[in-house]
Length: 299
Picture 1: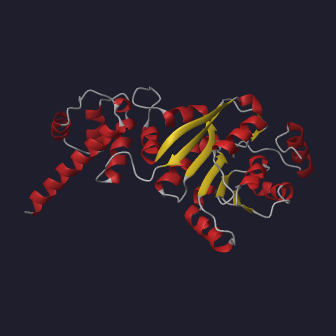
Picture 2: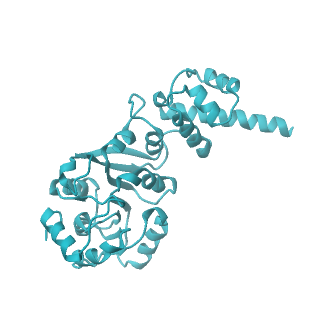
Picture 3: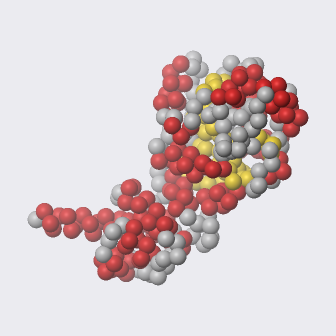
């Protein structure tokens, strides 16, 4: 059964008596070439554990199950659970979980699977067709919680993919660009037309593979301060880095100005023009300065 066929998807909807949910961002992929690219570029091996986010009716799940050692498909819509149990009934290496991915402890799930599966599983990877409206929270959840995976291959709104991929020379650059690139190397696998989904969304999509780094590309003294500086810088995009950081970090402008001058970073630059290395240098210098002030106060 070709689950990616619009006719098959239509028949499933009819047989199970449900309509797709706009609130859950349900758009099912119907293009086999794109499915093949996702599977191939995810580099799935026979001893991999795959966590799939939003399996829908099992279009991608079915292909994953033929490559991976084990697939855990996490679906928030309970109406789709019996559908998945039916469409994936031929596979004994697929587990269907009715949960909200944003509320799941993914590391605990990975450990539970590894402990109960007889075959050793080498790497864990994440694959998914993410709902547009919660793409950023899902991606950042995986990264901030340091989920124990080697790669994340996900479909998302093209505009979000552009932002994630953007460097300091792009107008699309934002806090998520710096955050994702701090944790991962970013590879664009495909751009996907809105015409190959059921129902047809209003915008095009893109597939990114995020290869999780073993260590960040820059040395950061304090992760929390680094990301606070990044978020502060981009929270007021029209302001200079001097103004946005001083207000976001509650720092005296004169002190921050001296720090930027010492680093030879122009106070008038905006956050989108700063590289990860420059954000790291700024946050490290602020940390060192604040630490000195605390020591003086103690003395």
